[in-house]
Image (cartoon, rainbow, N blue to C red):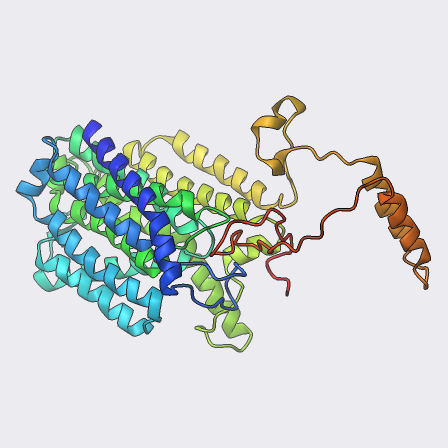
Amino acid sequence: MRDYLLTLCVTAAVTYLLTGPVRKFAIATGAMPEIRARDVHREPTPRLGGIAMFFGLCAGLLVADNLQNLNGVFELSNEPRALLSGAALIWLIGVLDDKFEIDALIKLGAQMIAAGVMVMQGLTILWIPVPGVGTVALTSWQGTLLTVALVVITINAVNFVDGLDGLAAGMVCIAAAAFFLYTYRIWYGYGIEAAAPATLFAAILIGMCVGFLPHNMHPARIFMGDSGSMLIGLVLAAGAISVTGQVDPDALKIFEGSTRQATHAALPVFIPLLLPLTIIAIPFADLVLAVVRRTWNGKSPFAADRGHLHHRLLEIGHSHSRSVLIMYFWSALIAFGVVAYSVHSASMWILLVVVALSAVGLVLLLLPRFTPRAPLWAQAYVPPRYRRRRRTAAAVEAPEALEGAEGDADGAAVGAACVHAHEHEPPAEVRTPVPAGVNGATAIGARSRLPDRRKAGSRQ
């Protein structure tokens, strides 16, 4: 565990330290696409965050290769090299797309080629466990097709959910943390060395996301772009394929007893296939709703709009940060709920806790206008948006005077109210601040001290 944590910390540190220089490089090269109609941010923001994440991946693999307890992963398995080969290919295509906007079919072909490269080096699904039957071996073509399908679906699911600042990186980090707990239990609890590569992949993926999130949380200074979203999707899928393809279910001794007992015992074996799909649960629901909505309105199912789940959370009154936290909550509930159920599938308490937390999540969705305020003694320790606002007497009188003078045609009462409110104040220097907008930064300078409070759907 200590070596895994060291690898995670090194990956996070390298990713975090490189993201700043990568941001300046993206600005210098003009990797700031124009704002599309469906985007939430209002100002061009640099992409290419996947460059820092890829070098964090390389640093994590390099450190693990030089650790005594993890060096055996590279000696006994070719999976780390297979992951690096596929990641390098998909990362290169993502960088070109962030800069030059590559066609979607070309990206799809590159994803399939990257999956094929990993299959050629041994990172593939070899069998599927079936309750009551045992292990069903797959042919070479069946394993290849299933592996490519899992990689492509996971990559595009992560890319699809990347719609708000910090959303994709946070959801993948949550899924990777749950996956790490599962694979570490298989490796350490059952003594199966074949689960070590997947545990290493999960630890590195957590480090990549943790190192990038400080730069990507709202207001984001840089986006990961397709170079980052496709990369972390590939790493997540590689971990699932590694466990499913190399860990023999018979080694767990689960297919024993009655059919019902074997079915309950086989649940931990299906978790490697289910955990990557937990991140697809929310995007898949969003995809189905989008197709129904667009066809109902007589539009093409592929026409871009602002009706996705994160757009709807903003429209009903949730802030940007709260919308992201709500989707974090549901992602963690699904991922860790599946892991907990795999450990104690016969326990009813786990199901009751999941149901209770689901009710809490529904209540949070119905409280978009609720803004908690910290008590007076904690004002200095919380962010400004949670502090109690103090209004001066002049600030209270001025709006009232202005409000009562709206009906005066000649505007004399308005001028008198303004003079009354500011007659004892020294003349202030006129400033024209750069509006921060929803995205928070101008992408080429410091953040504005007077942020723009307009809604995401308002026009300039």
